[in-house]
Image (cartoon, rainbow, N blue to C red; front, side):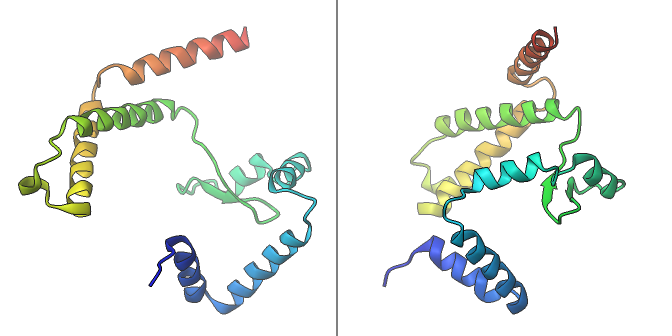
Length: 160
């Protein structure tokens, strides 16, 4: 028996979907496939140029909602990035780097602690992730500060 995880996952999702939604999605995909001369990037670029992704309209529709996503007038979903969120992004990046460092330092042959096989690998990774997150809290080790400083310098150079 051969298992193809990606295809099996897609088939399972399609089987669980609402039949009407499935037909609509399949017809849209068939229409996109029939226009072989157009690629996805070109289609998105044309929609952006035509103003289909109106950020102000989406922000007005999404006012008061904390979801961070909105639908524009054409029904397209998009993510609205909050302003001033760079510090959190840099901190998450620092936590990720620290996770990789910590995971490389954890013992590989500690089956008694983490367990055997895939489960043990996942537990090791989860422990490294939590240690990295804790290390990045507060002042961290300075990666986030350096990134924020270099970004501010790049923004100042671009503006001036």
